[in-house]
Length: 112
Length: 504
Image (cartoon, rainbow over all chains, first blue to last red; front, side, top):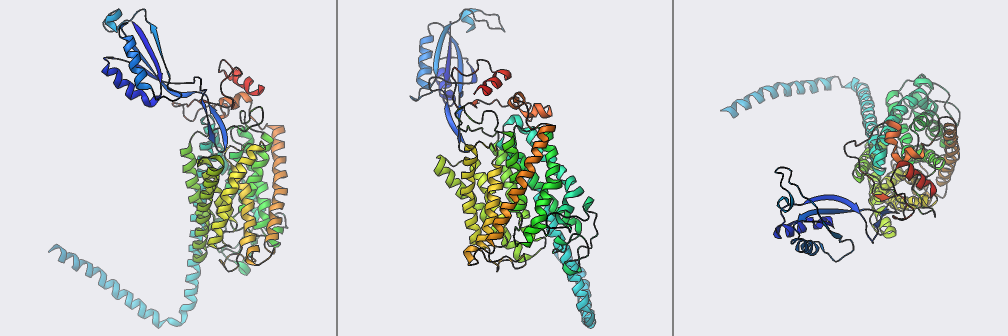
């Protein structure tokens, strides 16, 4: 089992969600997060004086998938979330030791 | 059928009334010889009623401006200081009401010397036979006997103006002043400083004898408020995080441009009481003219501020545009009754440019004014007062105090000179007087909150609660202006942030 975490631009959420659904992903968790990468935020102007916005708003998506599906799902997210401009985000794929469906007590791949 | 019945009823009502009216008219003709006297009395009492009505209704509009100030100032400040700003804006009108009743009105309008009123000060307690006017007036408030309204109408109208002068201060000292210092300063402002300065111009004092004119208070209200605000902002110093280590100003965004815009619209609306009401009479020709000059200046100033900000900063900045509208209103306040509508157009146009340059200037010289109060009220209060000396036209609103022709109307400096003297004199009096007041407060109750409190917000520190307890927005911008880096604290603890800000 793998956990795929993707940090994406907020306006790309709908496209990514639909692309994942087409790929057969049946569940996901998202969070509104803030952060910066190599672009290091940006400056804005208020009443003639600049200020730095360090942490830009992003959406974090978490998806759990079976080992064989991970590569394809990551590729789907990558394709759907890309604009080609700075700040498109990142995708992390990590192994997951155990998954439990709380309602039924199912374990492992069945619970994904 | 039903329509017919209705007509019968209507006729039954109308006929006797018509007959009655005709009979009355006939009777009136028979007794014609005694009418002129009765009519004169009737007209006079109606004039008193109309003038009183106009004066009070416009005073109520000016009262509403307190809400405008509360919304502008809280909108331009951060969410963590909202309760504090609102508390200041609210209580300042209550303080003004008390202080102006106790001493303010008397010191300002009572007979006395060229500098201060000396009779009937306490609780407006002097003899007075208002609404008698001019030569028929018997009392100690002779300087305001040019209007034929009852004493309490005069008091109420002048009170809301005093309240405006006091509330100007709160924005410039926002986000760092101790609540108690502001509270105490407001008493001093409305009970002593404002009425003394006001006496010089509106209370028959030395500036009015010199021929200086200020129709609705560009100097009396706005410059006096502005000078006190400048002294306060200078003595307090800038907010933590306002400047980088190398002295560059950092933008500290206000938390609600919605509130700020609401506030400016409320103020613009209130100004239709402020300026047209200052006739203190339902003088139909003047009030229409003044309403138009007032609105025109606000409009052209908004546009010129917008265009100036757009040209200088690259974007049509809303905060600057809102300041622009207020700048135009402040500038037209002194000359509104003495200048033509095209002159008002020009006065506003210049005010809008001035206010943007002034905001940038005060930012650069490290006088931190979170809402632009000094640029709006002081800079444009001075501009408007001088503009009167440039554009005054004696043929406009002859009912108002007689202005001499301005510089651009071929009058030379005969009106401009007293205006310059007035602007300078008010600065030379109000700035040191209010600085002294602030310094006494600094030595006794203290002026500025601790850095820890300033970082956490004055809402919790001064008042013990939040403005938005269920929705506490977290600032995501840096106040450092340098972006994240090794110099930033690892943990965002209050102590860590304060230490970090101090170190810069």
